[in-house]
Length: 502
Image (tube, rainbow, N blue to C red; front, side, top):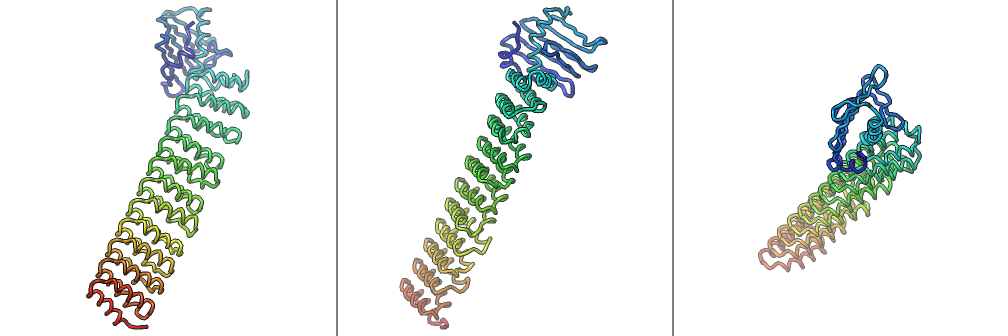
């Protein structure tokens, strides 16, 4: 028996629509079974109830089917005639009577041609619905191997059938069998409005998740978010689906789009950050987190989750970029503070670390808790120059709180460079009045400087400003004994002796 069915269609060339507008041309071939089919259709062509022949054709219509099998070519043409459809049947170019043998051949091959090409699908789906209901159409779809035709039949079933929950789920199950990611993606976008009900939404996203192409997967999720992103359940499932995308760029694009919808419930937030944490590219990870903060950073929970996620970024530059965005939303809150400085502590680059801390200092008048954390974070910086930049910026704000001064001096004591150590202590002394405890701490810090010249400059400045405080003077005289140079020692003592007393 000559067939172009299941085995053939699994190996056949892709069914393609080669003509624009109402005219359609379908062609496929199976070299293994030595068969090919060429079909041309224009106008409106309707088939009979069992798809064994053309029943009617419009005045502008034309139907031509050429079937080659094992060296024999059969052609069947239907065109409008004065008394109804006119039929022409040929074998190897010779016209033959349309007899029982011809009818048997046509009844054998035409149903599969109709099914696999998708010719007249809307009318055929309506007819099967009338005769057999949705179950009949679903059974028919299960026989289709052509991706395009399967998609077309499912779309028409969704459009014309009054489907119950199980029918909708079965439609998606059949959709998952579509091999072409492009066809499957087109089906998902067109069918999305039918699957916004909680009972069938999961089945929709199960089919979305079966799309292998990252680009098509992202395209579907983007289209769904455009229309239904404000729906919490849809947003949560779209974000869960995004995690399955392999391409970091495509995944980040979905997350960036999703950030527009405020991530107002915990499931959506968890799914967002699970997807973000699965991004390997530091740049794309940063892109997703920055979008979340820019759109939702006033929500402390999202800010904190973003900062925690940023700790997993390897690139110090990309990590710094996230923290700089976060600075605009930073608040003096214990949880936010901990998350921010924990993330900063994972920056290995001294320059990037310094940049984050000085940016934070410039953006607000922070309470002592934050200023202490800045000093403690600066102490982790290896570069004396970069560390000194942070501490100098901190000192310029004034060390009015003794606990901040203590953290500042502790960080200053970790500076190996005598010049940088002196610079930050002098900045503190020149930035405004300090409390006694803070000045004593600075004197003791100066004592740790190796260079007598650098040490003497700091101590002389203390003498000039605070010689009227007996406790500070006592601390200063004690610290001055660590100066080996007689000249530098005399310089400090002279400053102390010539300073006005208050």
